[in-house]
Image 1 (tube, rainbow, N blue to C red):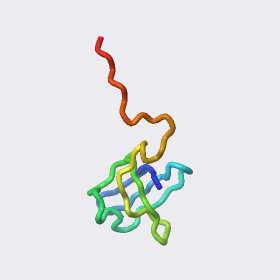
Image 2: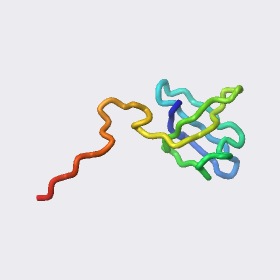
Image 3: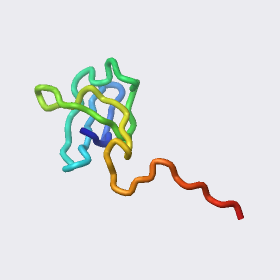
Image 4: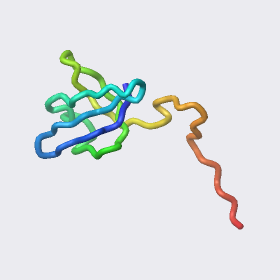
Length: 83
């Protein structure tokens, strides 16, 4: 699944992810950043995630528009001609 960080508190590691497809909200699982590339999260950051047995977000990875399969998304923008 892919979503966006709605909120994150670095002191408590509490946070919420909003899933892209249906806007469902998921709490972060305890230690959800352990073993990932993240040290902290910022609001609006796109992530891929899985759900644990309690329905909380875990196993976070970097997300992108390419991963999401957004129609007509150009991976490499055309250079702007110089005037």
